[in-house]
Length: 63
Image 1 (cartoon, helix red, strand yellow):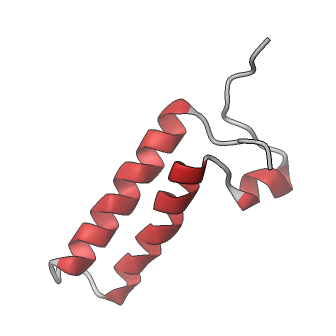
Image 2 (cartoon, rainbow, N blue to C red; image 1 turned 30 degrees about the horizontal axis):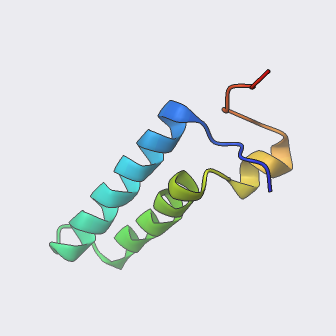
Image 3 (cartoon, helix red, strand yellow; image 1 turned 180 degrees about the vertical axis):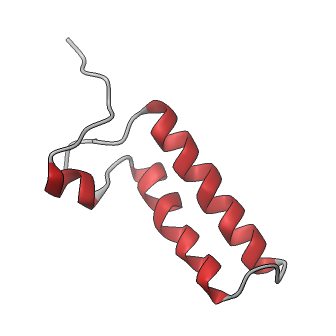
């Protein structure tokens, strides 16, 4: 599994995931806030299945 999520994309995913989970835990949003686990996981792992399917890559290439 090659990394296909890079830099700013990873940071945004992690922040969005944490915000959604935090809002769920405080009762601001319903159980749908647990969907924040998905961007959090893809940000931490650095790999996104839809990116792989569509051939997208936000990682910088190393030479």
